[in-house]
Length: 154
Image 1 (cartoon, rainbow, N blue to C red):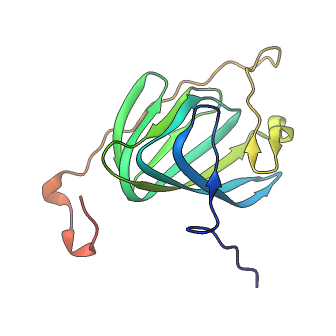
Image 2 (image 1 turned 60 degrees about the vertical axis):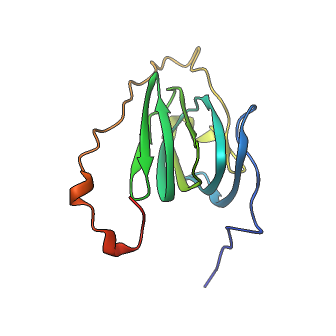
């Protein structure tokens, strides 16, 4: 059995240039993908950027905002955002904190673009690829539908 530690005491400042108020820890990294835990302080920001990997940004506590292309929406714990490959994306918080698990899955043709837990930025130029179109799913849960006995804030 192998136990991988992450969370307080294991995180370090990470993210693309310009990222502030965010620390993280890679939990797993190999040619199949990367799994990381991110912690945003109040007013934390991952600068909008793109990479060649299909990425799932899974909010596990707190909440904040995400960006896919030019679209920005609020996200809360229990929600996951899909960041398509080669599409500008980012995340930030305002007056709250947020923790997320990030799962990056490379396109098999681009699997060489994963390097020690960090996806290398790729413009897609000269690769014959067309940037994917991304978007955020409509928030379907309403405040009245939320079960506050779970002990988590809305």
